[in-house]
Image (cartoon, rainbow, N blue to C red):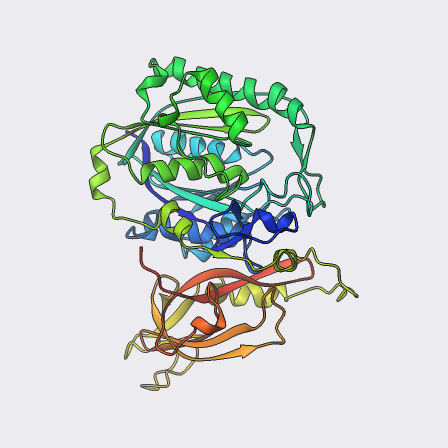
Length: 469
């Protein structure tokens, strides 16, 4: 029996009230969408969702990482390998990127399900993450949101994989040309009538035929939808009742692209009971649908933050200008100019520390050092080290200062000295504002983008206030 053994999710803390896009003042409780901060992208969101998914699970069990995204920035440079390194997974882990269509998320999940069922892998991590952009004040800007979701696939699942069906189609409804920043869409009526409605309907009917059941058999259906009207039309055409439809989170989250339907599935699993049945369907150059059945294994899975926790943790942006700055969409007087960025040699040498946040533990006295030194300052042993991962540990804040020179969408950048298990780390702070910073504040570490140089993003870990689920 193969299926989903664990899930995790990530939704950025920042919310952009849609009223600000139209130049109106924002009202608490009004429609909004989740937007990545200036130091977040598809990779950092994917890592955080994966950390949530692997909570309580030994990472050395993971045999493969399938990364799905349409907005990962690099070309000829794999995102899955970067995620695996940030998670400090085994070096022989199988890494794959899936892209090119909004349904690459469900495609990656089905690939992992088949690989595990065939015995090629025992445990496969699937991560879907997107951080797309519509042109400022364009039709798509208010619809798109940012978010990531992760699933661990094994043969000891909490949700058994039952069937899958897909249809392929060729039409230019949504697209983004290489080098462009904004997603484009053809006229709405064409997209819905010729693309979304017929393709999603055919894929769902296809999986229902394989399943041998009826629409009423399913506890929840997690369906991709461009908006409430088009989703409602698909639901009626397929014969589902409104109470079966997983909340699409319109006005709360936004369309998160490749991760959208899977985020809804993760949200549905948070309230699952053994025997519940789920159907998830994505759309893009056709459509793709999969069915699952919750098992008795649900009781063994510890609670995780998931979608609900992240939705509840929100911070509304104060202005539309802040959003523009965070996405580097604001006009600038001058360009800082091109450079080669961080040396690839240095990046390679320091990757255990920078990407995996691995410290060195003295094998003689146990003292942790970050970064790694040759001589232990506690017992003076020389070159006696073993790696020790800090990214999944918690610490506390020892000191802080505010930096108004480091570029940030909302200055100042908060610089902190933290301590974790006797090891001190100097890092930046995320997910908070200056008036909330205090000494002894419990912190955890989140993977973030520090800056981009030479057209390449550089990543490191930041401290974030602990907010337990």
